[in-house]
Image 1 (cartoon, rainbow, N blue to C red):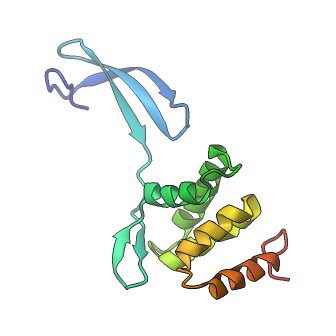
Image 2 (cartoon, rainbow, N blue to C red; image 1 turned 45 degrees about the vertical axis):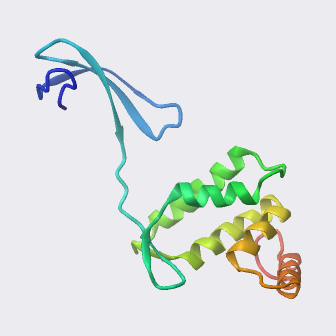
Length: 157
């Protein structure tokens, strides 16, 4: 690890601990050349996941973009940040646990809907209206009927 002060490449770890979220390790280091201390963070590098959009184009999976969509659907609803984080963490675990490194945007949308229907029905409809691109009241009503025919395990009745 290069010292940010003198650019020397040898340093010694003097303290190491997990961050609050448990996603990375914070390391305090001391440069063996100039003696100054600095902090580094170590995180797991995940393989890149490509999303195949409806138009056939591909883009890298963007956790923040998906979270913004979920937050927008849950806006002014009794859904906690912890519930949204848990939903997204569960999805990411399943997505990155797959053997393929490509996934369709349709699959991602369905995964969100499968989880949102059990968290908040209004948030579910909001997300579905954007994801499924409702064009009229008829398609909106069809989604409401579909939602009402799903049991607590996520299977259609």
